Image 1 (cartoon, rainbow, N blue to C red):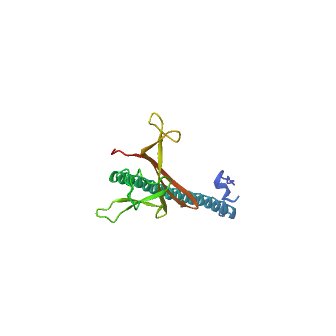
Image 2 (image 1 turned 60 degrees about the horizontal axis):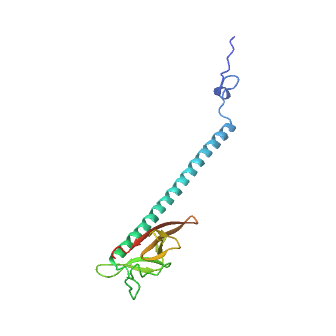
Image 3 (image 1 turned 120 degrees about the horizontal axis):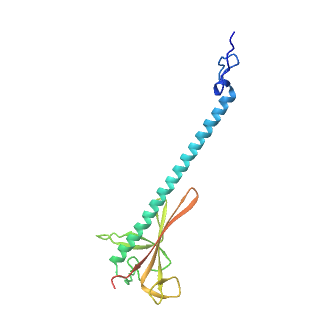
Length: 185
């Protein structure tokens, strides 16, 4: 009589000593289900992270575009308005006359053709709040812009455009800073 040799390796755990296959045990099913569950939850976690990151990057790109748009509108406003004009309604004041440290936004007038006008307060665009703030500029003896200790330059304004929003209970903002001069002088 010949003896049947037991197979070695993975197959041996599925075969009984007599060589017949009795199936997979409940423990093996639980281990397999656990591995599958962990894999799927890791994949879903990665997908959720990717969607959140994608959404934030889209919002940040939109906020950057809104900030750049406002800066271009301020340049256009400067180019279409005399630097030292003092408008009684304070909508067409030149950049040499605007109040510093006060939030503004730009709007189009109802004139034909429409003109840019400076309006006080921040503006809301969808989920974004946008402000434009003007500041005086100081220069040193070499005409370099300095934060303090210089002489005020009446023909230069610092423009700070801030676009802020809240996403997932966290505040975000994009800030664009530029210096505009009275180039028509």
